[in-house]
Amino acid sequence: MPRYAYHCEKCSGSFEYYHSLSEKKTVCEVCNEQTLLKVPSFGGIIKKEVQQKVGAIVDNYIEEAREEIRREKEELKKVEYKPE
Image (cartoon, rainbow, N blue to C red; front, side, top):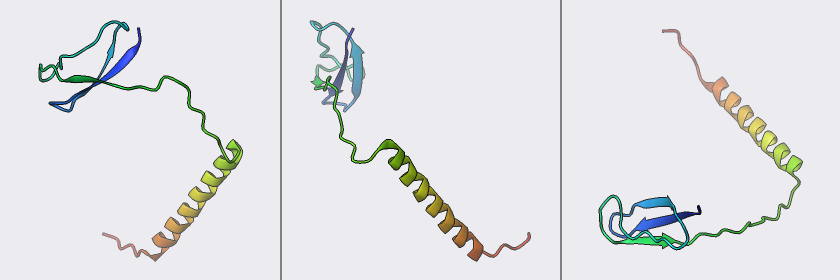
C-alpha cells in the first residue's frame, strides 16, 4: 500500500498513513477534528548534477577536517592547564 502524508490545520500535527488510493483520511487522531489535509508528495526520482567527482568531494571533506583539527590544536596550545 502507498504511504500518504497528512497535516492537521488545527493542531499542526503531521502524520503518515498507509492506505489504498481510493481511501482518504480526514479526521485527526490527536484533536479528533476533520481538519486533515493531504500533503503533496513527489514520487519521482530527482537527479542532482554533481559538479565534482565523488572522490574529489571526499578529498575536500578530509582536507577541511584536517584544517579544523589543526586550528583546534593551535587553540589548545594557548590554553594553560593548572593541576587541581
